[in-house]
Length: 315
Image 1: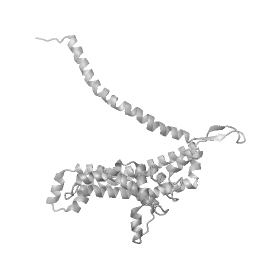
Image 2: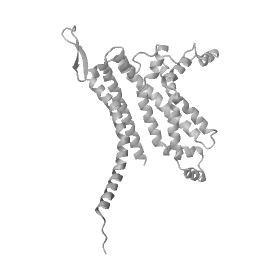
Image 3: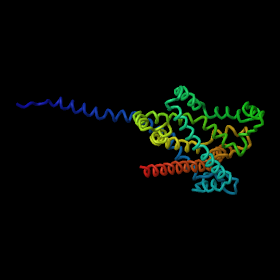
Image 4: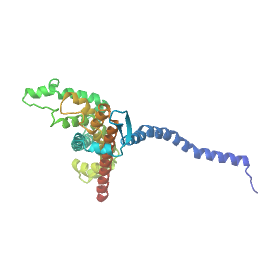
């Protein structure tokens, strides 16, 4: 005995399957297409525009008395930027700041995360919120607050230290980078701590119990279990910090009226800002910005290559 399925039923089943297949694809497109459009419009397009602008220059026609014309100069703006002593000095200053800030940030965030996730920690949730709160303060406001604490005439801390014979001048040329690093550390250490705390929470508790049975103390547990297992998160925090230090702009710009140690081209981003809005040379500013972006890519990619190479050798 044979059974026959009506054609209408087969057609409806086929349509149902097609809807089920197209359903997830439609949902994916619904969420990804707006993001892709915004990403292209506000991230990729400005980068391409800056790269194009960096290959042009405004030059006057004739004997210099004619109207300005945009002329294609290829790499001339890059050569001019890299031959400017103040811009080269700002790059060196940025590298020095990176050397100061990156280890300080990573070590501080790691220590805070380990302390708050220790078994004997008191009120870990409360302290986690307290350490994270500075991240909610805008960078301009945070710099203004610390600026008042860095000026001796308005800082109760510096005045109290001066009363006992300790004179500290945070905004002097030899210490201003450390003052800026302190502001960045105060603002972003809590954010990086949250990332490392989440990684510590994902470690199975069975590993701690096995280590305790084997007689491992707290220090051995940290160095043999916790730190190796949160290594990817530490790498991520380090990468974020490297990229963040290369974007240094707000803190020195806000502090510049308070000290003569910070010039208009103290950092590469400030130099580009000065060329674009004070000197009116947007083409040279675009070249400086592209140089900083290339350096950020080289440093980030180089750091990941070194870390991945060491990680593969360890395994």
